[in-house]
Image (cartoon, rainbow, N blue to C red; front, top):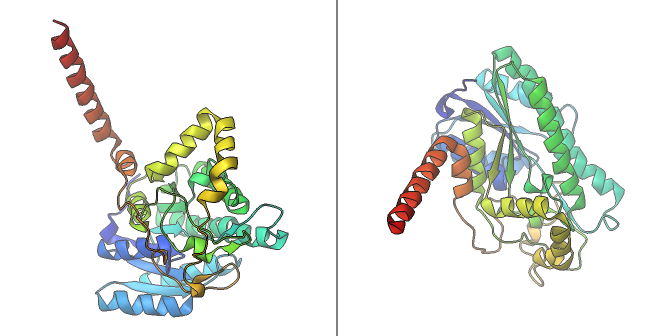
Length: 332
């Protein structure tokens, strides 16, 4: 299905003032797209709009909590008012907790589902209705490798990402033939404020396990999907390897998680920026990356291979031919 080039698109981005959403918004602007930025943090939205408008960008904002049932329709209305509609919708907003299933109160489980799953559901349905009337477009949902393989201490978040994967697959089937592309982007561990924003029930401050990637890797995947139909894109090869291990040897993967999973997600004595802690029920200070200086990879070869599978296959065949030819010469 044909999709517009990025420079001709209007893109809705939820969770636009922090982490992956902020990277998506900024990269979309650099590509010439107009953006409808959505977030709960009104002050951060205003600052973002001022900064990007001054740089020549086209941006509209909508302060909204995607967990609210009427938020999606208000976002659509804001896009129509500002730009006459939109061409792509990115369901990126997300929240999380750290702690065991017993430690996390049921109300917090419900809140994580309200944002991560129902926010994606409401956004997807509103986007589908609008895009169907326009003759097509793209819906990009942010899943996670934790939609393939749950991680200890993040049970509610992992459960929502499993649900988002099922939702996205169902939506794709239901929208077949409408001209609407539906993509699920699955990031690995990305250096965003997520660990600081998450509500923490562990006895140590949380962190994301290595290897880390920068938010620009996710933005690369998302904006590629806005212009090129893809079913799934993994953003970061490190996370994909853990998924492969879990599928090949689930018992071993469980054991590794039991032994090392908690320690890999804790950073004793370093809680990061206090102004960022716990945005489960209300916004806190937003930023592109975590407040701790951590090494993170700025690109993903696995993502590039998914973006250009024909080139990757051709290169692989050429490499295989070279190896076979070398072996034949060596055997003579």
